[in-house]
Length: 163
Image 1 (cartoon, helix red, strand yellow):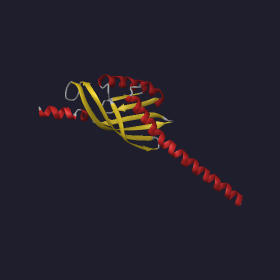
Image 2 (cartoon, one colour):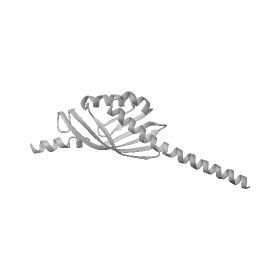
Image 3 (cartoon, one colour):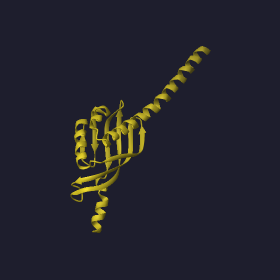
Image 4 (spheres, one colour):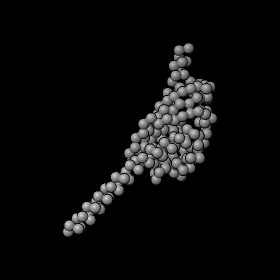
């Protein structure tokens, strides 16, 4: 009986230790995947999406009205590079729970093109937003960006109101 109790105790202790060791790795995994995804955007490396996104992944940018899979996300990136060649996406806070990661971020860029205030050239803007991602087996299954696109141009709106 004592031997069975000892074996059972070791089994429970081993199980608890194994679970404790897996939890930090799993919790850090989603954050690392999202950080790698942001780094790919910042370096304009759309080929990184091949290893960072599942084959059926979806990226949705609510403010831009974009929703697409990995191939469409690559094309979306190329379009953004054309109008914001120096964009930078900086994560400020990252929160993780299970297979979901949420991040607050800032976005800065020099923008040329149509805007809520009309056409602009070399307009330097910044905005804040949030991203929610679902991670599956170390890859992005779904990523959704939420922000107010007009807030990027708020300084220009204020400047034009003063003129």
